[in-house]
Image (cartoon, rainbow, N blue to C red; front, top):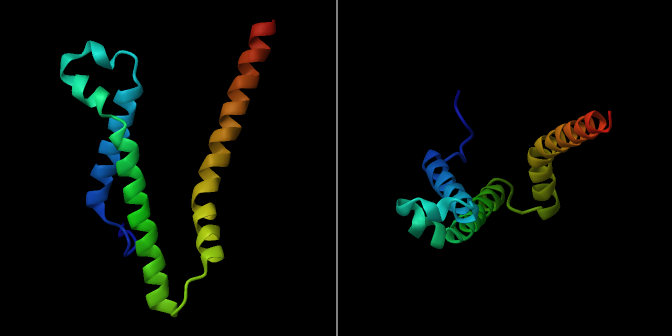
Length: 109
C-alpha cells in the first residue's frame, strides 16, 4: 500500500530512536546496563528530536497546503490533526478505564 506523498520512511527510524532515548532515560534499570549509561544520561535529547521532527512535518504540511490552495487555514489544519490523533486517544482511554474498573471491581470481591 502506498502512503501519502508526505510520508518519509527515513523519519520512522528517527522517531523510533527518539522514543528509545526517552524510554531508556526514564527506565529505572538503565544505569545497571553498562552500555546504556550514556543513553540514559542523554536520553532527554529524544524529546528535542521528536519536537524537531514534529515541527518539520507540520511546516511541510502547511507549506504543501499553501502551494495547493494559495492560503493556509490553521483551523482546518488542527481539525485534520485532531481527526487523525483523537480516535486512537479515545480508544486507549476507553480501554484504560475499562481495565481499571474491572481491576477495582475484582479487588473488592
